[in-house]
Length: 136
Image (tube, rainbow, N blue to C red; front, side):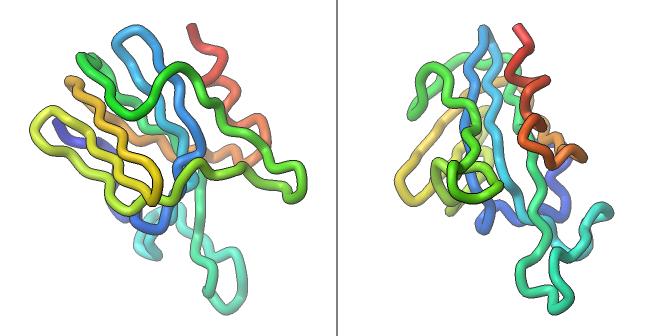
């Protein structure tokens, strides 16, 4: 298994925001850091100190086993600032054979499946993940 659509994405400075487990599918919700070489990169400040973060969904299909997460944990908006609360900062995200491996400061998630695809969202609003959360 490979993760499609991850060119020019810096996972080690990105954040896990939540997940949704469905029959034979796992959705992982992220705030990802784009490298300056990514086609949709745009700096959020004049000095280019903060990088370009985008919301994204990683879908693993044909799931055969899951370790480290259960149930649903949708992305939650912070009550104090206008952004999503992170579950964990990502230290490593990769694939070993047919297993997606996500390691964070306090999290280890292993998902075995047939395919994985990252979708970078153009919607940055608080409702950005709703279409994914409402799918049956």
